[in-house]
Length: 343
Ligand code: FE
Image (cartoon, rainbow, N blue to C red):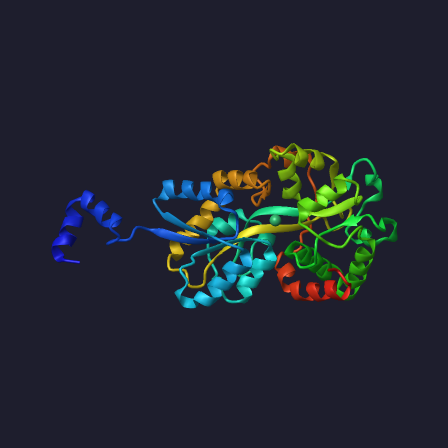
């Protein structure tokens, strides 16, 4: 750039804008690698840009694909913030050295300790529980109690649950490993497999649909899938969702299994300060309310109200297990499920 050009920048904001447009100068920006669908995240990113003037470049992809991409890009990765679901994945990214610690008073004061990494390399922004949904016509909820109980022979041929390759089931099983050890968890998984109404197939919505048509009596699913179906535009989905009810497991014990969506600042973030600013924005009142409602999740902040659908299921006791444990026991959980014949 010529000296003359520099003077013009100082003298004229119009000149600055045109240089920005021409790409000669760069404005503040942040690059987000997001495993969440664009429509679930874009509106709050736009709002952040409006308020801060920071441009958000959004790259959307599958979680494992984005993590692999960050690994391959190494120190040259443009990624500033990784946004994904399930602590099993956040832990994986952390273990691969892809996330850096962040010291932020905002994040540590707003996010309960169990919902952030102990080294502050990832932070939850929303919560979901993995619950039991049951056929309102054919299953007496008084018969239901715990995840452990799903291995009881009284549920033979009644249980629908998706495959063991699914990270949500891996995390649920990892929580069992953390609470009971691998051996007891394997025994539980064998009992669960023996009670399956059919070989694992489809996603969580498919399990709800299978309960609705009487193929199984109960299913294990994430809360937002049921809430999404209840609020769907398709009347078929609404009807299927209305055929089932939520049962909160383990309420007399440790509480229902919790997982998260969350984010971490990339190890090589070229725009570290902006990434932290965005992460802090995600726990603001405005972002928490919108983000949780958009995907029917629970806000990570306890002082932000839940959506009407979630409120209709009542309050529940959540397993206080530190979520790091789910990542730490993931590999063991996968081996346990495999040995138990959970396909
Ligand atoms: Fe999901």
